[in-house]
Amino acid sequence: MMTRLLRLGIPLCLIALVALIATARLATRGSWVPPLPTVIGEWTVTEVPVSEEERSMLGSPRLTGFELTNPLQERIFGRIVATSSFDAFLPPLLFRFYEVTGEKALTLEGGGKALGQVNRQMGSELRVSMIAWVQRPDTSTSLLGIPSGSTRSPLGRFLLGSEAAFQENRSCLIRLFTIVHPADPSGAQARRNLLSAANAVRKALADGKPLAGARGAEAAFSEGGKDIAYLADKGTPAGSDSAELLPLKTGNNWEFDATTEGGRVPEQVIVRGPEVVGGVSGIALDILRGGKLWRREVYQHDGKALRLLAFGDATSTRIVLSPPMALVALPVTEGGEVHWKGNLILKGQKLPTIGYSRVSARENIVAGAGRFAAYRVDSVLTIDGAKPTHFPAIRWLAPGIGFVRRGYADGGKPAVAELKRFTVK
Image (cartoon, rainbow, N blue to C red; front, side, top):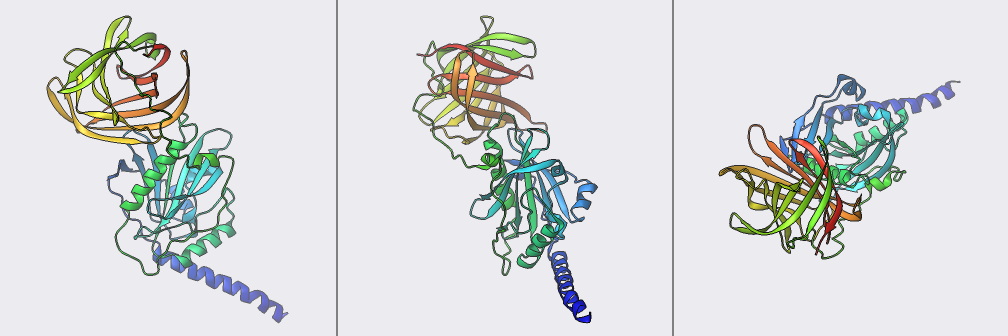
């Protein structure tokens, strides 16, 4: 009997000793939660309090909740959690209503792995993409301790947490997640945003202090799932041909059905001809409603970029951009970004302004004029000031055709115009 008790007791004592050492290791090394600056890369950082319920679920560690916003006002939510308990590796409270439907290792800039996941809300088609990694002050990363898949048993958490306790130095767990928007059906832009934010956050948390024995390490996890395509690297394909994104030959015209707050209204865009704006040569486009001039936009299309020189009505309230803002860099790449800084000139007044434009996706657009393979170009101009003013716009451009859909603000309200017929020479 005593022999049996000893055989049973020794393993239990060893397990208890391992747990005690692991807990001590986590408690002594898991206090690193560095602050984020208010701006990192193209992302603005806002601290967001974490609920006491979630904090308690994670074992009450030190943690920071935050929100990242890019120039297009797209949002990513985040957590930085001290790895001071096994439960600290659990996902945020939100994900108790989701199931993991895709999982894959993603590579960060300069090396280092992060775990990418797609989580689908139970009973709906709403998806949230997430990226997570464990980071040290020297920016080395690890996947150790991060639960994998949708099944998380207490034993699994213990084993994963033990690995983290024994094989890592001072570190924190970082999670970033974002909703996959219906306008991003493949999840490609959500993935690009997560990687952009992850690389920015990783660099921002570096303190330049190397750690003795610190090394990158990976844990085994499942890879796959029915939504794995949302994490696939589709690359950045170049434009399919050399045709102009916006053919600017005089006389070209596009007719649209526009949907605004006031209902449906016909619109027509006509290439009027050459115009010089601020000493720069461009091509003016007149936008008519009911046969009358409503707006005028001036573009320039050369071998390097499609640029916007001016927009607004034809009177003195027209807005001029100095220098012209590039909307699309050529050749076209999906995910390609353009940053711009200059002045927005209105009624002779120069207002410091920043601009951002992105080829968000290549989409198949079905409109009254037919079916088109078009690039969706999101852009925004932001006037600096105590209360920034944003001028957002979306242009769907098909090579050789030009506008097939347009999204813009009409009196401060969103409006969408879809192509009904066109004449392009």
